[in-house]
Amino acid sequence: MIEDAKINDAIIAVLDLRVRYGEREVLHGINFDVRRYETLVILGGSGSGKSTLLRTLVGLEKPSAGEIWVKGKNIAQIPLGEMDEIRKKLGMSFQGGALFGSLTVGENVALPLREHTQLEDSTIQIIVRLKLEQVGLAGFEEYMPSQLSGGMKKRAAVARAMAMDPEILCFDEPSAGLDPIIAAGIDNLIVKLKKAFRMTIVVVTHELASAFLIADRMVLIDKGNIMAIGTPEELRASAHPRVRQFLDRVPEPEVTEELDYLQMLTEERPPRRS
Amino acid sequence: MAVTVRVGRATLSGLAYVGGLARLGGRAAYFTFIGPFRGRALRLERAVHQAMAVGVEALPILSLITFFIGVILALQGAYELRKFGALHYVSSAVAISMTRELGPLMTAIVVIGRSGSAFAAEIGTMKVTEEIDALQTMALDPIQFLVTPKFLAMFVMLPCLTTWADLMGILGGALFGVTNAGFTFTGYLRATLDALYLRDISSGLIKSIMFGMTITAVGCHEGFSVGAGAEEVGRSTTAAVVMSIFLVIAVDLVFTALFYFLSPK
Ligand SMILES: Nc1ncnc2c1ncn2[C@@H]1O[C@H](COP(=O)(O)OP(=O)(O)O)[C@@H](O)[C@H]1O
Ligand SMILES: [Mg+2]
Image 1 (cartoon, each protein chain N blue to C red):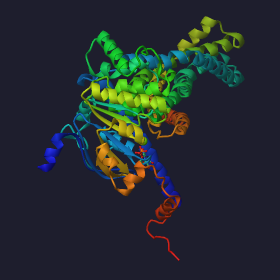
Image 2: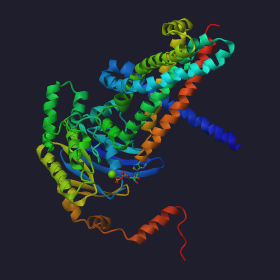
Image 3: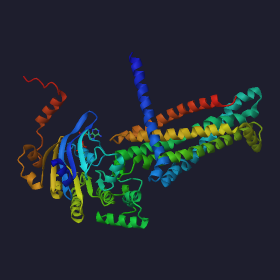
Image 4: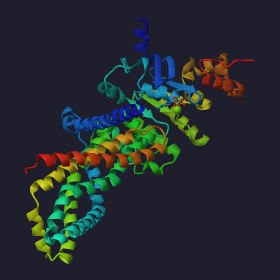
């Protein structure tokens, strides 16, 4: 009953989620939820499983255990047809943009509208222009993705993700691989979208500054486990040693890393100490 | 012992591979024949676009190759036939080997090189750049969107290309026939028509359709098997070419044997 209440309150609820690639488990029992109309940032070092978590939320990876409730449906269990209905109201912006190289920017944004709606072509053109304007790419309809810079590609990808007026918008590393000025521009875009539209936004990033700029709440993830959940203020005030280490950007001491490595190599039998 | 284990394993993985191809083909067939009745539009304009790339753009190189093959067949045939003073049979030798075997086969080889490898590279690259994932998150089925148009295009274009290849091969044979075997051009063509049965042409065309399906399935399957790295795209393209050539020859053997045992004596 308590769990039911939690599911209804949240637009996404993740319960004891485990994901594995082959033999190797990457997420070891994740619990959190995303509230309607909030901006949640999933923060963590590289290789901690952030992308895997986001890909599982949008149904690209199958969980090996656990539940993911999106708008009251457990997407770990539902058939593909129902998943597609959820996906039509879910936008995803991939790390590299993932624009279709054979289509122009305008056609990229128009694609979901052409495929999923009965709108007139002239209406679609207007929506495309509007969406590109919202991300600061007005007038770039006829460009091919290969003619755009990294930052512009990400903006175009956001325009495409927003084409169907999604309820949930997801970003994988929106500012990774961009120079600081362009990256700040993307952060501002997310803040702008968050203010202008009633959307739930989930952002995966490893950049502290942009995380604190855009987040309503944050989930800190480390090696496939959740380390902390809270508002930016709560996290800043946290005394948890691993959280502090991450937020204060203390590098992992080399020695522990080597010990970890040794331990990994000799998993079952710890090295004998003299 | 070890040998039998290894043979067994190779057989199993071979069967699994063919199973993968069949699954892909089955899904594409679903989206072609059943999907449209369940509100999933068939992408004809994408198929036409593919057909241009697969078919029309292959015509120059295919014409040249099969014309040469026609001349070569005539030369090789004549080498043996003139011993028996049967040089006038060169037209039927060329016509039958071209329509029954080399027309479909050479077309398949050209299409593997041009299109089978391109299918693997296109889908493999889309896999690496997460474009396939993007399709899925937009509720678009990658098979319906990318693979079905390719099957359709190949299904239509391979028989067309093969017919053209047959014709060019026969013209190649005619070049030899007119210059070296005392035929007139119309005489050569008439001799060709007399020698050919409809089943020679139709068996070649049926084979060409099977080749087209094989090439598409292998190319797309190899593309989808690309993991995360860009270097895997190169591997998958090579694998698509090698595997397609092997499977096309295997399919050729099966169907040729079938036609041999089924044809009237
Ligand atoms: N497709 C995959 N197959 C196997 N292992 C993978 C795959 N994708 C990611 N991994 C592994 O899972 C772990 C988490 O990866 P990822 O979720 O991409 O981390 P992050 O996005 O936080 O950098 C990494 O160790 C990575 O090597
Ligand atoms: Mg990542």
